Structures are given as C-alpha cells and as structure tokens.
Length: 632
Image (cartoon, rainbow, N blue to C red; front, top):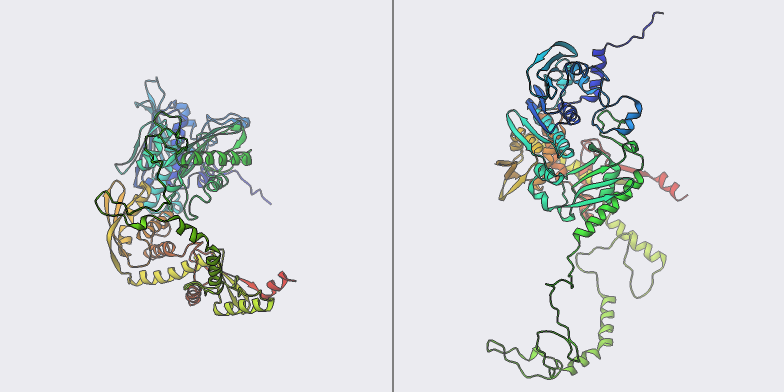
C-alpha cells in the first residue's frame, strides 16, 4: 500500500488557519489594529470600503518595519512578540502566535507600505493569496500602511456567506468600540465610504467612554477602584436607576485586552440584585490588572476567552468593590453637623437653656380649651382646629369596644371584590379549624374551577390525560404572537397607527448602520421613521399591535444585526419574531386563570405548538408514572 500522508502546502495551511482567525471583516480590523498598538502607535486610522469587502486599510505611526521584517511577518508563526514557550506566561502584547498576517494574506490581496523611524526610504510589499508578487523600495511616512483588498476573493464560499453590508459594518463598529475602549491613550478614527463614523482623541478612560457612547453616560457612571495582591480593578459601573432593558454597555478588560467572561459578568449582576428589575441590566466598564503568569490567553483563536488562576478570589474582590461603590454613591447625603454652614436645628428644653431664634410661649397648652382663633387674613380657623383634652380621653376609653367590633367585622367579612382564592391557599372559615377532608374539598373545588396554576411567575401547570404539562409562559406567548404576526406580515395586513407624540430613539453607530439599511423593511411593517441626525430617529407611526413601538423597533434591529438570509421571506420571519419578542409576556408577570386558559387555548390551536421559531422547547410533560415515582 502506497503512502497517503503528505504535508500540506503553506498556502493551504494558511487558508485553514484563516478559517479560525479571520472569520469576517471585523476580524481583520481587530488583528491589524492590535498589531499597530503592539508597534507603539499613538495614532491609528481605519478606512473601510463596502463594509470591508472591498478595502480594509489601517494606517499607524508605530515603529514600522525593515524590508526583511516586512517580508518575514507574513510567514506562518513568525512573530516578534515571543521567543520561547515560557514567554506565554509574561505576555504584554496583544498578539503572540504569528498567524494573523499569514491568514489575512491567504484570503485577500495585501498591499503594505512601511518604514522605520529615522530611515530615509521604506518598502512596499504586495501579496496576492499568499503569493508574493513584488517587494521594492518606496518613499513613505514612518510607521505602517496596510491595505487588505477583496477579502475572501479566493474562497467564494466564505465570501458568499458574509452578511449584508449593514450587518458587517455593525460588527466592525462594535470591534472598533472594544479596541478604542482598551486603548484610551491612542488617537483612533474610523472612516467608512468616506464618512467619518468616529474620531477619538487621546484621553482618560472615562473620557473615551463618553466619546464613544454619549455625554449622557457622564453622570450615570460611578467609579470602582480596588487593589489587592491578586488583582487591581478599576473602571465604572452605572447607578441602579440607569439600568437598561436593552443595549446595556458591558465591557470587561484584562491587562489591556478585551475579554468575555460569563463568571465575572454574573458577579456584576449579583451586586444589582434587588436594586433593578429582573429584565434590566447595568452598564459596566471594568479593567483588571493581574500578573500575566496567572492567566491563560491561549485558549481560543480570537484570544477573547481568558482563564484566570484565582477566579473565586477575584469574584469576591469584584463583588466587594462594586457593592462598596454602589453603597457610597447611591446613599442619601448625610448632614454633617460639624460644618460651618450646617443647618441650625432648634430643640425644646424646659429649663430654657436651648439656644434658638424661635420665641416660645410658656403659657401655651394645646389641650386647653381655646376660643376660636382669628386667621391672619381676618377669617376664622374654626373650633375644629382645637380639641379638648376630655375628648381625647374619651376616645382612649373606647379602644376595647373598637377592637371587638374590628375583630367581628374581619371574621365575618367576605373576600374583597376582584380577589380570587388560590388553589394552594384555600380560605377556611375563621370560626373553627377545618379537618383535612374539609380543606381537601375546598382545594379540589378551586382546582376544578381553574385548571391552570402559575408557578414562580414563569411556568403554567395544567393537567393532561398523560400527567401534568409544564408550559413556559414567555415562550408560549412568543409562539402565539409569532404565528399571528407572520401571517399579518406575509399578507400585508398590518395597519399603521399614528403616535400622538413621536418617540425619539438614540442608537449606537452600529445600530444606526443596520437601521439605515432596513428602512424599507421597517416601513413595510407599519413604521414611519425619520432620521434627526446624531444617530437619533423619530418614530411617528408604528404597527397597530399591542407592543411598545421603541421595544419593537429595537428588537427588529437586534434580529437584523444577528444577520441571516437576506431574502425577503427570511427578513419577514425575523421581523415577525422581533415583534413577538417585544410583545411576549415577561417572566415574573402574574397571569389570571382566564389569561392562562386563553394562552393555552391559543397555543394548542397552532399546528406545531411544541417549539418556538428559534427551536426552544415550550411544553414539557411530567407523566403519571413519573409522578407516582416521586411519591413511591
């Protein structure tokens, strides 16, 4: 049998690596900007054409490269960041694998101009799909100017599955925001199709936050600062009253690197328990400084997932720091009596030693019988303004009688109108304690009147022939609304309703880019929107459905940002799903028995009631056999 194992050519190996490292245009932006930061750049300009399909250009004033380094930088596993495996535990740079430039060159046409500081001439290198076409001297400015053209030109399947320009641009903007946040000392700009989306000057961390996300955040954020032998944490969190139902700004950074860390995210949310509603989330911008040897950044191709050696300890430190800041800045201001301008509070002293500016009449007795006193305007205050002390005593002597009457009324009173008995807490007569049979019969009677019970504000329990069905109320309502809206959207039967007062929505640059691209779709759904400038939109009309128009529009933008098939039918399905998510009953919302019965009836009238449009389970069955085993 002949040998069948062979070494792959470098060009093929680089294309395989590109599948992990370079997933979309935003990945190219991330890798090139991080290289510029590692090169010591203080000014970076990012120029995009057609959401990165045609051109991604990054110009920086970093250290630049010699002609030899420029050529070697595009070889796989060629890097200036590390020299040995031990260097992985003392990383102070963004990159270290030496895969990014080789992967980019494998799936695009690259044109690089670079020159060292102090040199008189630079070099220009042109690479086409991993093939070096030319390298020659070039007059250029110190630093690097990298142009990546026609991304995925030689991988048609990858290029075909790129999302719409609005979606890809939104991803680039989000990646830019993360890069800009973690590098506040770098001047950075983003230009798309000759339109300046961002131009940020150097500044403090908070100034960078405000420049990116709006001046309104300036007074919403409070500082978090702590330093221990394990970790130093600095940054900002929002006050509870400024928590958001949507578009919460949540960023975690470690040693100058962005990261996703669900464990620490949960720690932040725990600090806001009982301070904000369950459907809202706080904004936070937190930067961790740790010993590089205590973290591992080499567990994911994008280097965004990071493993910490002391996660439980850092959890406790993080929670303590945030709770301390919330307690310090969210408490009411106390009065400092030692201040010079402290308010003077008069006190009454029978011996007359109290120091105050109020004249007190020592002969005044509020319980004494007083004549009708004249008012300042010449009228009379009336005798009812004064009460004789004997009247007060007579009231006190009737407490036993009043209490007896109150007990008799409460013992025989019927339930207030609108209140309904609970199947789990059946009311028993107050005259005598019922036996077990009486209580069971009362419970059975209520259960026969209402066949549904709500549990934990989340699930609906109802009997069935095979046992007990447990229904997720939010998903059930989502499914019902989706089927209703998809029919209305498909048939064009959604009516538009004029708003009495237009709603103003301020979007992020990424959301604005998405909305601009889907205005025709939004208009077909019954919206009448107008751009006001500065990423603000006015909603003048909305679909005539029982949804909040702002929530509905934001959900549609979120669905389109996630992307998918650009076909009209797919966009209609995403729009219907977004409207259903905006209007579906929330977890924790209490439902009446009639509402639960109606929801279940609507759900089971559908052809496929078991799953939501995105594949989540709606109904689960606890069989009679399972119930029997529970009590065996």
